[in-house]
Image 1 (cartoon, rainbow, N blue to C red):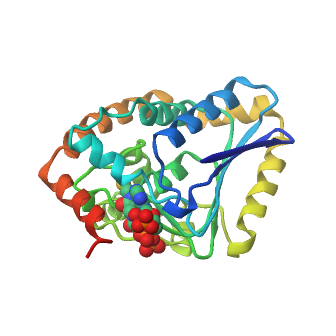
Image 2: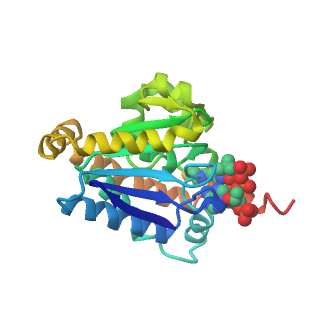
Length: 247
Ligand code: COA
């Protein structure tokens, strides 16, 4: 459910679970982390491009997987942690093309991308508190750094979406594009980046990111997130999501 292709030193990772709004399940996390590690070690890959099929970029973590962990039916999935660590440690530039909804990890992933192109219909949200949960992917640190505490807290606490123009004005994105053009624009930017001197690009990205801090924040978030997942607040929210189609 992740399509991968490589062309002119750009590794394209396409979320391809459109029928579930590209919610990430264990298999998708595993593929993503494997591909990011591959990008790190393969000298023929200079840039990673994240994009998605369908009308939404990504509806976040698969909520039925969260529910299974919360109920104790399955153990927490190591592949989620592996993906987050790969994001924190990546030194090749990441580019994203985002249409429609980008929820949870679909939005926080963008804080690890170096160039972000949003479609006019993009809507970013981080509804962790709505779910009785806490931010992940080092977003408790990265989002306030990027947009300021007041705006970040509002996004976390109320779970409201911000539209593409707002995200651009907050500094989360590089440009807003017509929806039918956003993937092509991002691909062109990825190819332009791939032709830049890769050593200097990687060194620049490394200087701009404190991997140790990101890893430390992720460790703390994962600890609290795992506790919150078993809370009555989270269980009630997950149950409500599972039931909403049945009413
Ligand atoms: N996990 C599992 N399945 C999900 C999902 C998720 N995070 N998000 C969407 N889906 C599924 C829906 O259950 C539905 O499946 P079904 O057709 O088998 O019933 C399908 O994807 C389409 O979703 P739907 O809700 O009908 O689309 P929509 O356009 O009305 O709404 C969203 C899209 C993303 C706003 C809505 O699905 C949503 O809020 N999802 C949950 C987002 C979330 O809280 N993610 C976790 C953040 S930490």
